[in-house]
Length: 153
Length: 110
Image (cartoon, rainbow over all chains, first blue to last red; front, side, top):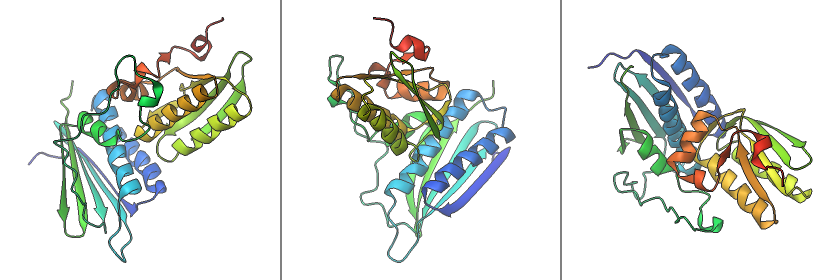
């Protein structure tokens, strides 16, 4: 078991405010773990906010439940890990296949502006920003686990 | 996130300050829509004070660019900070939203 050098958590109703609060929690994490290279901080922060925003924007509560966002962020000497929980969520249907995402539609050099979509980049961005990403069902919760290998300079 | 808008003569400068995330993205669309409705054709989004952008923020910028072009104008971005640049390059969107070093350089004299 690798020792955690820094750890921060958040759990609150899955609203826009939770995203603003999560930015603050990430800022605190990097104060505690200033040794993590800036590029890793930037990439990990972006992936965590994308995942949490996905929960707030697309999470569906189970009947009678209130959807909560849970985030646990840990930093070890070699790895940044985020466990992002959609608590009280209906199961994903279908479960996102993160290993087989469609290629982001990237129009050719002579493409018209209209060919560029305004949405749909979140999952492929997450995939590109972290080393591993998994999503699974645990009880009444959909759990995303993101990890990015980060070796101190 | 806060927005300031300034008429610079040759162009209108919009400066979003803070994080351009899913909360701020709809506000950016409103601000740019207001500039275009008021007759603004050349718009520079000065990102010097935008410390973070996610896919929602990027989507809003693309939407704003389309709006500006549809009204016969253009929208350009300037003073991009490292995280925003990372997102632009990761998504290859720097091809349609090319960063300019400063707001003044976004629309050269012509």
